[in-house]
Length: 406
Image 1 (cartoon, rainbow, N blue to C red):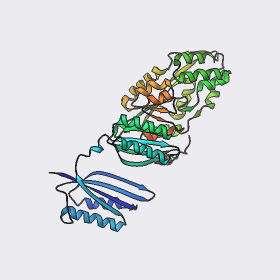
Image 2: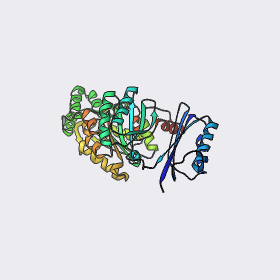
Image 3: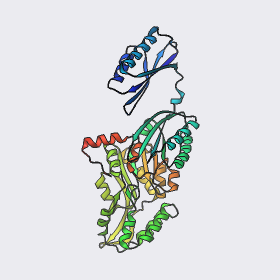
Image 4: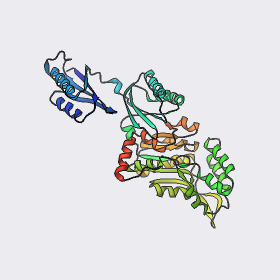
């Protein structure tokens, strides 16, 4: 039997009971629900329902489908809504295959940026099936459901447009692939926190300029991290271990860090940090934020003073990737369900290993290698890439009595 579809679109002022009344009518006819989309913007409703049925395309007002049309039009008139009905054959909706989520972040988000992104989607032969806002602050985040595009090709096209428009754009496959990511592994210095811990230590040792220069070379990938770490740590020799307590108080979390960790933990994600910094500082972050796993270097202390050496194996670029794999194994989570977030060349291996690699306010080499880049200064913007809207975060915080903070 030939399968046909009927698209019912209701638009107009939103009010309680619209969806209920429509489906109550549909329940009395031999149709099945194939798709539903609904959005309300400033009190104006757009509700689209696609139903499927067997038989030929109905004409006129007679017959079973004619009665359905009449019933729907009566509902629309009663509720002061406009209705549009269109029929078609079931072509298995080729455009619906290979759905993607395109997430756009802007602060502010200009019309020209959306025009450019939408134009690139159209030029790729793809279709925008749905658009919704995930957040209006601290950044504006718009998510589009796109079908009919090759993800790698579209990602490359939109990266060019994102750079031109000064916005962030992420392209991910829809469905379980996106929702199943359950382990977040994050760099610490200049990612979870602002600045570099070794530079805070160096300021107390009077060698900040020299340490900062070596740090920058390492983060750009111009210097082997392990060697750069040894050179910088050597400059700290003789510093009293009392400096650790001072530096812990000087550490400043990146805006949105607490919201990000708290929200993901509430949603049963596992959260880990992996750092080329030092356990004397990261251990305090683990306790403060309730982080599940951590890996970092340890500064050697003898007789109350730093020796200028690191104890044990150095957590470097490959070490961070190994830590991600170890955390995933301990948590019983496949690598495909992990997210790695970092900013420097030292994070490249773990970003490449994870199911989703995110460059956060990162160096160019990292932005080019990552699956997506976030350049706004708010760490909780990463929630939107996982499909978690700001409204859900705030609602959950309100239930828990949490006062919003960085």
